[in-house]
Picture 1: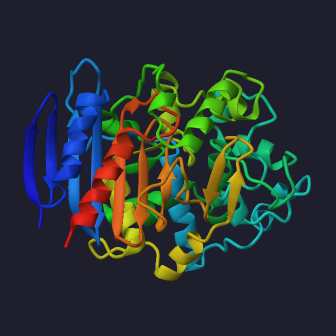
Picture 2 (picture 1 turned 60 degrees about the vertical axis):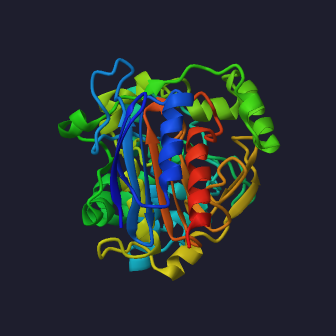
Length: 408
């Protein structure tokens, strides 16, 4: 089905592409030639089979080590899609109930009127705990249980199910503690047992130093003064303009959420390349993986991949049922969520109305598309200056849409 390709351009591209999908390979090469890509990978599964698996470039700007088949890097909030998949899978197996209150598993969470929030509310960013009220040190933030205790004791910014606001980092501390309360184990360990190992994924939530050689350090992108003019969608362009202004004020909710009081600035290469941060389990933001693992995971949410299927159709229906949409109190723009998954929206359109997944700050994205049977993953070590995730990944997704439309 697949044919091996070896392409030599300004960079070195390796991997597999099935006949009919060459346009995606061309878009991948174009990202290096026109969009300053350093090192990256893109992968597509369709109906459980790989049709694209490409990697290329370097793990560092100096070109001292090529990006290889097994290279991984940090994918920021694309991690949330893995966490969402785990929670939906455990609901399917009866290990937890997404419609029960968080407090029924974690009694302390009920403080300050939070007793009615369900796990679905938590996973869809509706519990009003997007920012920490306490200023904690870096060491304290790496202890997820201590952070979770502070969050459990906070009053929500809104009443249950009356608003949404993107929990960029607190999502991880909350889901991590909830998983510990339900299973007695860390979320990273449960993810490894139930998803990563059965599917053979290079995907860690809590990255071991023993695999550090596989890691491509993140590289901060250079701010683009023409960024706004390059964003095609007018609503996305206006939203990014507001975010740029808002982020410059450290007192705004968006700035507090994205910097955690300046202790964990996100995205920021030097901060997040640190091994102590990579090793700490942060199920919102410190997943380390590659495109193949993202595509394979999402493909197995739609059907079997080498005999493994994670979610059945009924659970996918429930997981992709819209839980909330509207103006996001943190992002000050339109957001739309199912149970843990981003649903198609102007800033993250994916392949269309039947897609679900999650993008990450800096450019990584993984998603599934039910209509086409696609599982998609894109990962790069260059943290794009764009806050809309729409250029390099968008270029690949547009090419994939073209390829799919041309299939017989």
